Image (cartoon, rainbow, N blue to C red; front, top):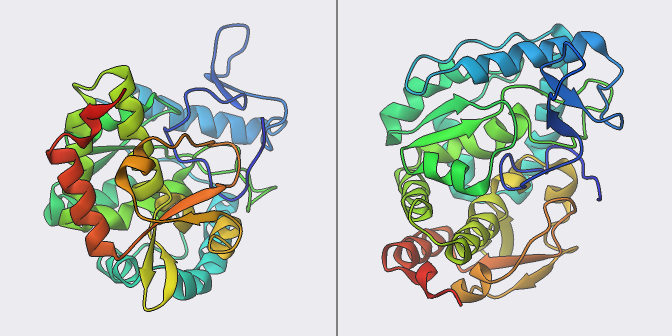
Length: 298
């Protein structure tokens, strides 16, 4: 299984990864990291990861989110990645997302806490972010979206490899997703996809999952003659954001094709679908969900 760098694993869209598993006994660690994980030999990091996992496992939905404990070196990782992404965003991210980032500005020095962001998210579009210990199934993740809840990891990648992570982390969740949730249209699209996932068959679920992947996770749009990014997986990835318009194959905007195209979460994307505009993407996908386009799976 391939590895990817700088937050490219969206947080819940992969069923199982070898780097992150629930503890099955024989250790005091709540969560067991694979020996290839950058933090495998760092006991202090692992203990902090355990403490953050316990927050999620003890959390009751709807209650205030406890603050996650971060070390100085973890805040330094946040600062480094933010600094490196900022100029790339200005050049390669669509105007609507750049505007949303001014509506929900993220601290550039310290890792923001979910409890600090939730009041603004709820006031803008009714969403909130709640902690999750690690990967959950696509259906579980999307069903929470249907309740206006975005399941978010809170831990951050190991400081020895600040531009790489084998799993989703808080950098992906906040830099990729948080600001988009203040947009009423994006928030509503997330909710509609979640409502559909709650009743979809397995085949229909795959179509919903693939639509989510190629739009809200890895979506790109035409903007004044250029291709710009809006998907969270691109927004949080230095490597992938830098050349998404030259490395992958860029396909025409076709919702049926999008919903039937499998993806590989363990490598850079080899195909992206270009929407004519941000507004057109939002309207088209919303109509596709509302009118049951996902129900025609075969």
